Amino acid sequence: MRTPTISAAAKTGARALLIAAAACSLNACANYSQVISEGDDGSYNLTATGISYTMSMPALTAASHEKALSWCAAQDGDMQLRQQTRGWKPIQVELNFRCVPKQMGQLDQSASTSLPVVK
Image (tube, rainbow, N blue to C red):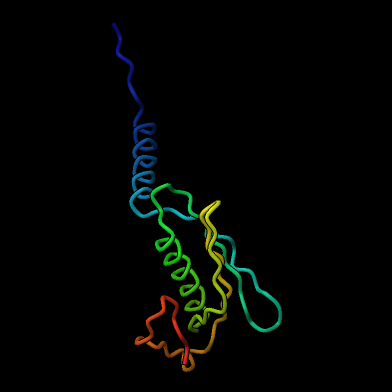
């Protein structure tokens, strides 16, 4: 009797899928829209949507802030949050932000709010 064998490629593909699924559940996956330029004032819009049932609103909010921060860092600037909107169906965070020159972007660490305050 011949036993079925799984090819090495199928094993590798299955292993990669399991790793991705585990990373998604542990790191709370999110889908991001493209960063969209909003008008002439240099503001941008980014939407993050949670795609994992294990993702919390604070985790999604933090992930969207990190994405906006990295966008501005790639443009050699600091992120200045202008507006944040959160929704629950689906779990979603929408940011409206600007990238400001690094000299202007001193964050106030003593503020008690969850959003950075730019001085």
